[in-house]
Image (tube, rainbow, N blue to C red; front, side, top):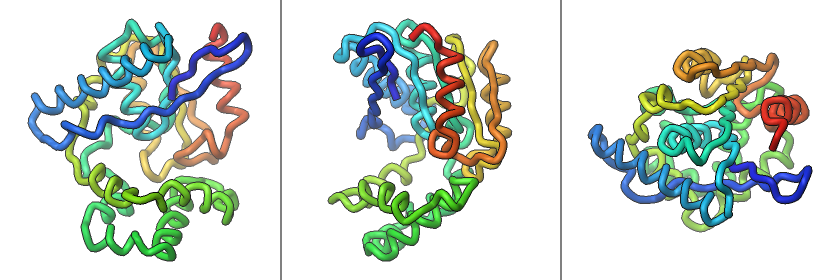
Length: 236
């Protein structure tokens, strides 16, 4: 997510997807090239938006992409906010079981059936939310909507089949911009121990752990998260 001023007191929020090519390899050199491609794409996005420097906010895999951009192009990044970020868990063996299963063809094929897809999405949301009461039918439909688009299942399977780590976690130690790390204490997908790993690797990073919160603080604790962002980046 890119946070950039639109008018005084307002923010524009944009989500950029990962580049679709060159991310299937396993060698160190190829991981480096993949990271460079992600950094290039992020820098190009900022350039086209007319944003010279931005505060990047990334959750989960979005956090990993933000780390790569901050490490490779610190001149484009003013501040970095990592929310339950991937980075130390990109090896397939560390992924949640539900994501590991979706890598396999028969499982992915079954996922195409709408009733099964809805059950899988419901199960996943019950894992990432600490408060399961928030996993309402409306919330399930909200997350389900992008997955019913043509090609969505194949795109997910392709992404999960890739072994790339984007040069992470090594690149984490190259981040030198002011960094805020926010984590849900009860994250079942990426443990809170990874927040400590980010905090240890990034100089002067500030870490905040939210109690009774899971993998998506922006969903469970939006007001508290906004307060943390405004406190961390008052001059936006």
